[in-house]
Image (tube, rainbow, N blue to C red):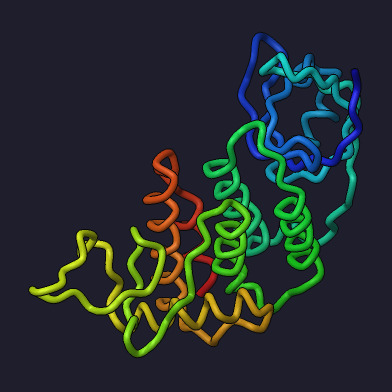
Length: 247
């Protein structure tokens, strides 16, 4: 049968002479793999232009739960983002979001709320020219929540240090009561900043004002957190470009 759904393109791989396999985060079915025939041919260039990172598509697809690879029957833009292409900062944000999703989503798990959140962030990036620097931190916190690995914001005087392995704030390890995950503790300053970001993100209030280094350090902590909880989340690259443009 056929299904009409919105989708966000995450990754494409060459297939055969003129086709590609596209990993698409769909609203109804979650992450799916689709074959697109002929898009690398002379006649298919128009369709190939629709397969850029996080392109927002309206698609009619052949939907067969017994097959790992599906086919896209028709596709066209679901939304036009007019101010992203050609803007180095906005493109770096899009590539970063794309890589986070590609390396953390699993096929066959629908996540409508996460899909709608990402679309909302794309709209925000398109319309705003300021207050973009903390989007990566906010996005990673929200995505972790939607993927079931939300960091617990239980920060207190008795639990002031965030442990990346435990996913929560704990008391400082001592010789008497040393955590088995002692190597995963953030220091006091990083933990306090992490708490501030978690609190703002979850309450939908503006992120704290952070220097470029503070943003970079917090983002690196979140990337390490994802890697610990998603073993396949490795060889991440887009944050290096992001750090260079968000100064």
